[in-house]
Every structure is written in structure tokens, then in C-alpha cells.
Image 1 (tube, helix red, strand yellow):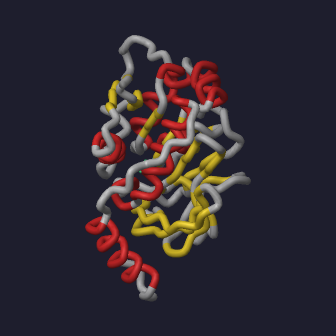
Image 2: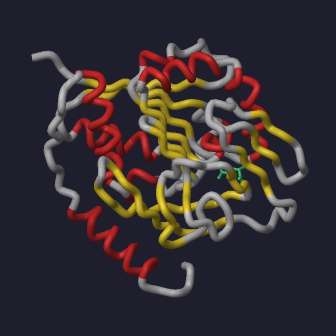
Amino acid sequence: MEEKFLNILYLYPDMLELYGDYGNIQVLKYRLEKRGFKVNIASYSIGDEEPNFKDFDIIFAGGGADQEQSILSEDLLKYKNKIKEAIDDGVFFLLICGAYQLFGKYYKGVDGNIIPGLDIFPYYTESISDRKKRCIGNIVLNVNLNDKETKVIGFENHGGQTYDIDTPFGTVLFGNGNKFGDSVEGFFLKNVIATYLHGPLLSKNPELTDYIIKYSLDRKYNENTILKPLDDSFENLCREQLLNRFLNSNSPS
Ligand code: GLN
């Protein structure tokens, strides 16, 4: 029987890897391999040969500080059309924080400098001028995945405030979101999830991980994949503790 596999591309791992973002790829790999699927992981950084974006099933990019964002933006913009084609083709994109910002119109840094984004999505991000004021801390969202509500837990640390989001990733139950005290967080459009949640996000949220895995396998093999359940008792216990701590207390921790 043919071995089924997914190809994952990690964009700019040397620059976009804050707070363990690579853990997201490790979690995808772990949950796929546990079910007998093979995983190929490739990476692309400045100076590497141009990746064939459409050859990948999942494309991931993590968070990065303003400095890294300004360095890589010019390189990223070279691939605007190819990235857009891959999105239109249905490749799944998971974009965290700095990468989330770079897929919008622009990111305006603390000093007022404009870092151009890919302008694939209509949102934009501006930092507030006080560099000490950042949205930092744990965050919990209510997210709708295939018409099922689930709570997504993460950690946010961003100065950027993101505007003009029509299709957010989730509603905020605890924490800030796209802006200070916002009611919504991130951006979600079919095969693209862009979010401020680090954590790493997927280790705390197995349901979300399986959503991405199922979407990607269904698309690649043109079938309705039934994912074998895994033993998530440890993850669920951890989630219970965290949700209890964040949602049943008044003080952010
Ligand atoms: N530089 C961006 C900000 O502070 C992104 C930070 C991040 O990726 N954690 O808003």
C-alpha cells in the first residue's frame, strides 16, 4: 500500500522562531507519524533556492522581532505571486505573530518605520509609540473548527495592533487579541490561520492540530480521512488546568 505523507515547509526558521514556534511543526509531525503517515520537512531562508510553494501541503512561518521582519520582508515580497497561488490552490498556511503581520498590507514599527507586507490579505498592523506597552500574556480563544466550538490556548507577545480583520481566528475569552482588549484575535480564511498565539500553539491544542492534519490529508488524497484518535489524556489534563486558571480567575497570570 502506498505510504501517505505530507510535505511541510518552514519559512525563515533562522529568523522567525520566537517562543518555540518550531514546536508547531514537531507537533504536526508527531501526530502524523503516530498515525502512520510520513512527514517531510523542508525549510527556506534568505539565499536558499526558491521553494516550489505548491509542492507543499502545509506552509508554516513563526514570529519574529521588528528587526528580523524588516530584514526578511524584501525577500518574502519576491514570492508574493507564488505564495498567493499556493493559497488559492488550497495549501494550508499557519502563520504566527510576525509572519501573520507580514501577510497583511504593512507593519508599522515603534519608530514609525513601515515594513511592507505581502498585501495578500486586507489587514494592516501598527505598533503604538510606547515600546514598553505590549500585549503580553496567556490568551484563550473560542474558535469554530468545522462548525464545532473549541477553546484555543496560547501565549501572546506583540506590540503591533492589527486592524481591518473581517474573518478573525477566534473570539477572545481571556487576554488581548488583535489589539489591546480586543474581542477578536487572528485571521482565518479557509486554508489560512494567522494568529498571535505562540506557545507553541499546537502543543496546547491537539484539536486544532488535527484540524490542520485532516484538512491537508483530505485535500492531498481527495478523500474524507478518518484520523485515528490518539491518547491525549496528558494534553487534556494540561488544558483543563490552564483553562481553569485563566478563565476562572480575575487576574491575568
Ligand atoms: N514585531 C512584532 C510585534 O511586536 C511581532 C512580534 C512577534 O512575532 N512576537 O508586534
